[in-house]
Every structure is written in C-alpha cells, then in structure tokens.
Image 1: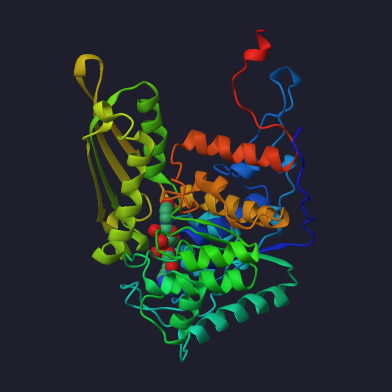
Image 2: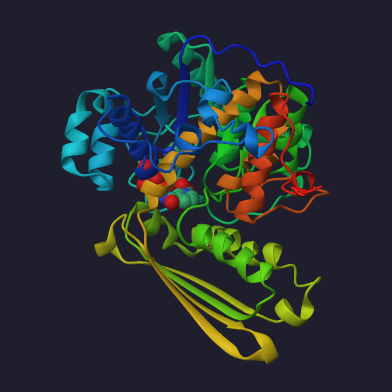
Length: 437
Ligand SMILES: NC(=O)c1ccc[n+]([C@@H]2O[C@H](COP(=O)([O-])OP(=O)(O)OC[C@H]3O[C@@H](n4cnc5c(N)ncnc54)[C@H](O)[C@@H]3O)[C@@H](O)[C@H]2O)c1
C-alpha cells in the first residue's frame, strides 16, 4: 500500500462557473438536472459510470470511481456563468439546438433561472458573436477584479464554499506566449495597461486562480497554459488543467493511432475533414480562431507515433485537418478520416472512419468529470497542472520539461493510478507475472 493523501471533506454543494454558456455548457446543465431526476443515465461520464480495479484480480475489488474517491454529488451542483449573449441557459440551449424539446421542457424552470453574468469580451479575440452583455472597465486589471467579485458573490448568494471554473467560451484567435505571459509581474503590468496580448480567457483564468478556484480550459484558446498563470496556480496550490476538450475526431485519433503503433503498422497519411454547423463552427469560420483549433488537433499524432523513435514507420506521413462551417448540420457534426497505412513488406492499406458525432453530447460529461475531479484535487491538496486529467484534453498541459501523453489508454491508466495512489492503494502495472510464478 502507498501512503494515502488526506482528502478534505466535501461539505455542502459545489458551484460550477463557466465562461461561455453555449452549447456545451447548457447541455451539461440540462443533462445533470435530467440525470438527477432519474430521467436519463450519465452516459459518457467516467466519474459516474466508471469503475477501477483494486489489488489483485482474484480479490474482485472493483468499486465505482464515485464510491472509491469522495466526489461532489452531481445532483448538488450549482451552475452559473458569463456570456456576452444575455440569453438564460434555457434559451441558450434552445438556440444551440442540441437537445430535444422534451428534454429541455423537463428542466425549463431550473435552466431559465441561470442567467449569464456580463462577460469580459474582446472582439479582437472572438468575432461573429452578437454581444450585448459585456462588462465596461477602464483596464483589464479592473476586468479581472470584476470577475473575482462575480465569483465571490456567486458563492455568497448560493451559500457555497467550493467553486470550480471550466472555460466553455468560444475559441479565441490563435496566440502564442509573449513577453507579458512569462512572469506574474509582467502579466499583472500588462493587465494594468490593457495590453492586447492579454485575452479574455486569460482574465477569467487569472481571476479564478487568485480566488483559489480550480480552473480547466475546455477551449483551445491560450489561457492558463501561459507560464505566468500556471506558475501562479502552482504557487497558490490551485489545481488547473487544459486544454481543448477531447471529443469527436481527436478522440477517435487517440484511440486508433495507439493501436496502429502497438502493431508496428506504418502511416503514410491521415486526412481528416469535419463539417459542423453550431455556433462553435461559426466562430471557427474565422481564420484566426480556426488556427487555434487546427494547431490543437494537429499535435496529437506526432506525440503518439513518435517518428523520432520509428522513422521507418512514421518519419514522413502527411497529416491534414480541415474544418468547414456548414450550418444545416447544427451540433450534429460529421467527421471523415482517411488513413493510409502500410503493413508487411510495405503493402498499402486504408482505413476510413465516418463519425457522425454530436459535439456537445460528447463534451458535456467531460465537463462534469473535470469539475468533480478538480474539486477532488483541491481537497487532496494537489495544486498546479493536473497532468492526470490529460485523458480529457486534445492538448494536455504538462510541466514545460515534459512532453504530453496523448494515447487515450495510457491517459486512462495515469488517471486511475493517480486515484489509487491518493487513496493509498497500489498502482496497477499489468505485468501479472506473479500469478504464474
Ligand atoms: N463541443 C465539443 O465537442 C468541443 C470539443 C472541444 C472543445 N470545445 C470548445 O468548447 C468551447 C465551447 O463550445 P460550444 O460548442 O459550447 O460553443 P458555443 O459557441 O455554443 O458556445 C460558446 C459560448 O461562449 C460565449 N463567449 C464568447 N466569448 C466569450 C467571453 N469572452 N466570455 C464569456 N463567454 C463568451 C459565446 O457567446 C457562446 O455562447 C469552444 O471553444 C469549443 O471549441 C468544444
């Protein structure tokens, strides 16, 4: 047995605040209320449906994750958020068009009561949004103070001790870390002078960390992954994770690519194209936002296939990702993958995947799990970047000196072994030799 961590009790309810009350966020909110009433099962949620094995196989100890670690009850979650569009969660969900009318009507009252707080918004980072619910501030420093006050009043008004923030806002224009992002002092000075390199996503992340509120970034936008903010999170002991929820096509990639590599099958090329018609797709129709998404999607194969270790198999493949906005599809997006592989003696083969996915249906349980696990991490005294939550992200955050792990199955092992370790159980290594000796 390893040493168990002390995990603080979880008294009262947990607040979940989301910058961005669009399709993903409202699908989460409605879904949690529907599950709470017993209308549906929490399908897709590892915290609610997953199990993990403890000890040796003959011991047959396989608890549900939620019975093994002390997680907040989804039924007790209190939702809130910020959005530049003033629609309440019911109307935002109607506009998103993800859920059937009968699902939404069943939770209409609770959803209608969730009205977005005014947003920190900058049209240089997100265009194509009809904004009328934005904050006015003299500097970004003031904007951050306003968000901090929003968090405090949300806690006060709902009688909450614990809150987490999960960024579900539109994808911002592509940005890379700049001078203002490298240290906390530089970042705070940049806030003061409203430096254009500070985006709204960074302002929310900074405000959450300063309030000791765990933060996850579900968008591909540059946010807590800048050195100033991840360092601040580590210093304050606040758990943070990111970025870009792993759903749809990238989820498939991180399932299929490890299998090809496991059998030492080579790759000549992987062509991926997507059509999607929700507001996320509309924002991604702007080339600046699209670039953030493409960069996030492209890095996955490189890390899984390790061309430096296997140059004969993966040294020279072509990887193309396309995303097209096609309004008739709404949230029901379609992804096509054409994978050119090679086998014994270099003979070519092809795999075609046509995934008719529902983006927000795949993303909502990810947000739920992240909220519950981040709260657990905080109560277990785990601050800074939570690499064990890589399982949920397209571009997992790590310490700068480490490379990210993209293989879904390694990520799952990492996640479950982390849970075992914090509870003082032995991690599972799958050798199994001891059964036969
Ligand atoms: N659905 C998925 O499967 C999936 C997967 C990975 C990542 N994501 C990311 O999650 C995010 C949300 O996706 P969605 O489908 O819900 O999009 P959406 O367009 O339905 O919702 C985004 C919401 O964010 C709001 N917003 C924009 N700027 C904001 C700001 N500065 N502050 C607060 N709110 C702001 C918009 O008004 C909108 O209501 C996107 O960044 C998307 O790329 C989604």
